[in-house]
Image (cartoon, rainbow, N blue to C red; front, side, top):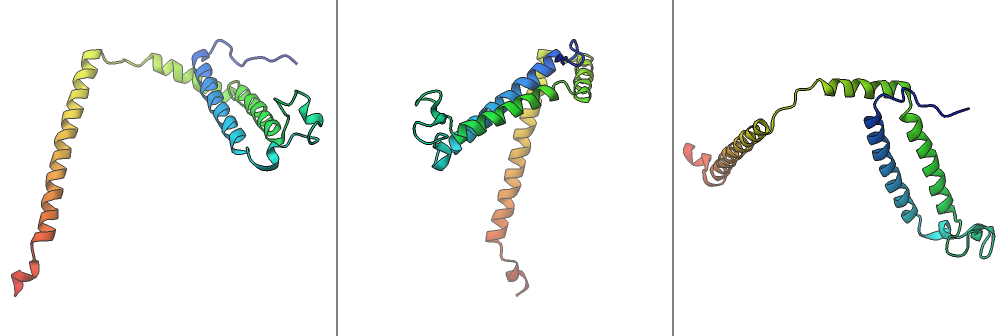
Length: 150
């Protein structure tokens, strides 16, 4: 049984980025798990001191935490490979890349002017909300409505 890619010419960039990001998350998660299991019996090499768990030497003992981390990394690696070759997922990536090629991207001056408009509008709206909030807070603490009716 040979390993074949589904649509090998389609969505190369998307597949690569997806596999890279998932692989980075896998590596981070595996190393975090390895560090998390640094206490207790997870550290003891298989077979005790001098046992078959030290087949790679004392520097690299084969412990339950190392074995669990390797198994999870291998299983997740195969999962990432099969996800990046799953027909529906690859078709989705191919269609997404095709749609993104149809997008008309704005020019640099247009992006700059739009960004300035958004920033100025946000500052003005923030100042307005601040003034209204401070005014209502001042009214709440300094005006006594019971004095109006007595």
